[in-house]
Image (cartoon, rainbow, N blue to C red; front, side, top):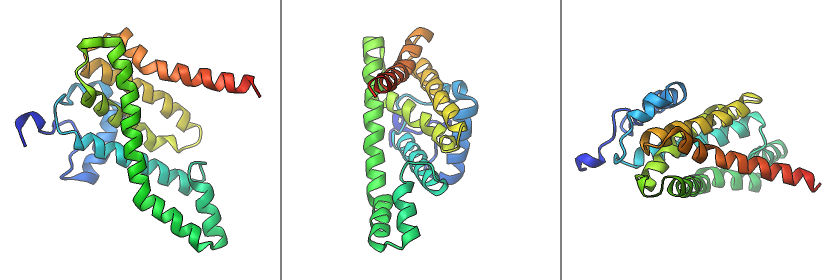
Length: 199
């Protein structure tokens, strides 16, 4: 691996996955500015990809286990009524399809944010891989998002993580980073408002 693709010492380390996962999640959520300041712009993309994948999968599993309506309906019915085909289908999804689905979801979401970055920063943005790295590490909030009430605060904090990442890694101004981070939230709130108005 070339020097430019080396993992930053501040990032998730695939060689010690569990310890590094917990340490990285803690750093992202407690000291996001310091964390993103230490993230390499051209380091190995596999580390943030694996971290983001793990965060989303943990979120789905904890949500299903605690009754948060994500995938739990099918799981609860299958286990409660002994429906073996349904159990098999759920396990197949969890083991085989879920990681693939989550990987695609990460890329799409990061791509959406990078479109905003490209519009706001224009030629001064430093590439999709950097935006992907920001979004992947911001998924750390999902480790708390399955908790009732706390989840709403965690989601809101996720937008701040995007803000911090865009500001540090894309060298954006506060205003530019705020536009990139908050525009999706504003659009989502508008959709919810309009959906409620037409009921």
